[in-house]
Amino acid sequence: MSTFMAKKGEVARKWYILDAAGKPLGRTATTAATLLRGKHKPIYTPHVDCGDFVIVLNTEKAVLTGNKLTQKYYRTHSRYPGGLKETQYKKIMAERPELAMYLAVKGMLAKNSLGRKQLVRLKLFKGNEHKHAAQKPVAWTE
Image 1: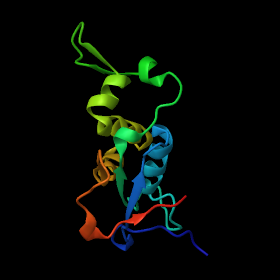
Image 2 (image 1 turned 45 degrees about the horizontal axis):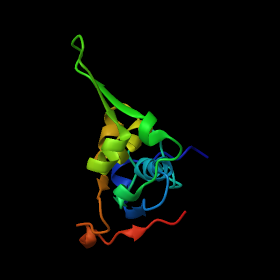
Image 3 (image 1 turned 45 degrees about the vertical axis):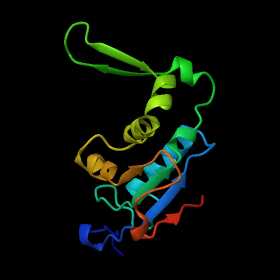
Image 4 (image 1 turned 30 degrees about the vertical axis):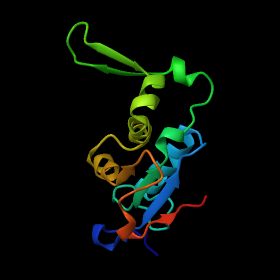
């Protein structure tokens, strides 16, 4: 018996909805990353993009535990001297909560072309409404 390897054309993609309201940001991000990679499927193959589409709702209601709101920073550098920019997560969660969820999920995916393709299938929304009703998404239950 040989090992099964999924092929690009065989993968059937589904749409799932995750609700981040009242849940820790990292826990929601790990669930989203697992669905994007396709690790929940029996046909999972590491080098094939066999994940699903993920819609995350209520990103502004996601919770950061402990003192992360004040102690955690998002840092970028322009590669020029003195080019470090720091943004506190309190500000990110107030102004752009989708960015916080996006960065959390992006950090959990592969740092190559496969991870970039998977990240395109992540759809983030502030409120409870989304524009993907035509795809008939199903609520994900753990």
